[in-house]
Length: 258
Length: 318
Image 1 (tube, rainbow over the protein chains, first blue to last red):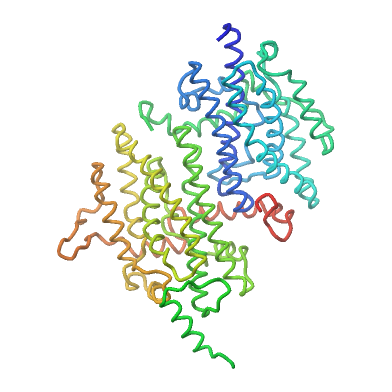
Image 2: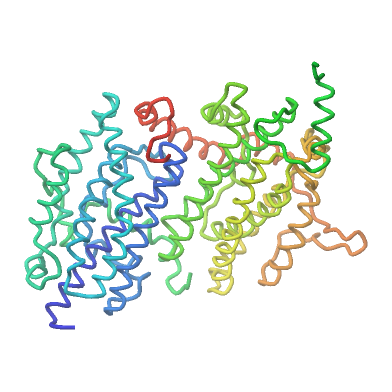
């Protein structure tokens, strides 16, 4: 590996990729058994498994880089150490997945659609990254992205062009998701250096590609970063709650192998 | 020439007795159709309700690998539910009914689901025991059903059984980690075995209808929907799993449990069949909450079904 700076930026970028997929996989898994119909339950579960699998690949890379074991990285870090965007940590609705879940399918569709497009664009850029093991993982994950895109795009178009109620709910969700979307494109405080070291292209370039793709669809409202700065470890209380659930068993007997 | 109902019935029974498979469009007596609808919709809805106790443990599973494995398992259960409901839907079509009716029957309590899915699953040990022993029990009863006289059900079961084997292996792997783990992990596991034992015995249903006042096993045997009695299945389960549980150094909460060499049968303490009746009629420890989750999912997504139009299933899924 080249310089300390390179290593630092690389690790930071991989945490962002890993934590995004890990948290969104978790949010997806909360929908198990609750999706709008059984067929969607099965399909969505595949996508959530893919996301969790992608996260595992990235965490594996971090393990190779000496950051610690995959299960410790996923179950034994504090919220401040997480680098995911705020968008993926937001809950699916009110209630919990165990008790009184009042989940919002419109929000879920829009979040997943917009995130998947951003992820796809990001991966295309990383495929040209200067770090070969990351390049290879990006290649591998890219193959699945067209399926995810197709899934969420069909849902998105179908609902937004349907009943007045569906349209209203979808438009509301578009607003909510756009308010946090800049947080997905952000690379945080290491951003300039990541770009200089050819790990990824500039945020604005990726964002422009995202807007170009969606141009015909909708979005005139500006993207924002309303709450926190996930890339720099500043999160909402939702993340702490999510991590508590995700690590409940792992933390219950610290010396155990599971 | 008009064919009388009696002649049709004789022909039907002779087909069944020769081991032929009945298909969805074949003539069948009403009570055969009814028995199938009852059996398959209960089986299908049990798979779907069965996703709920395990789903509780998906995010909490203690490693990334376990999270992935249990998510895949819950997905399989939902997939089995879908496969079975499709079979039931075909049978219900001539009666003018569809999946919506199945859901409504579930919500009203008319359609029952399996006793095990009314129970609490308060620890990670339960996630292991459900996958190892509940799925193990399901494999035994579903394997018996593979020879069922109704072709579409048999074909669905073939795929289901293949996947259940993976589930049992996944369960066994969780169990082994706990059994070989710390004292706390072993205690967690023993506690789960204790909690699930009587539910596992109940899983196969009563020996005769004397215990609960009614049972469909005689009719289902005559129609070759099933080939073994509840008790035969329970004995198979005990033969397969009791030695394995003991081999892990675990105990079973029944001091009378022993294999009687003379009768070649396991002797065991009968579970409380009055309690069983209460559980399956919706008065189990978690019946109300699990059903409430299902109802809530149905209601919170009603706008989605409406938006998708009459089919209720989006293009995405098809």
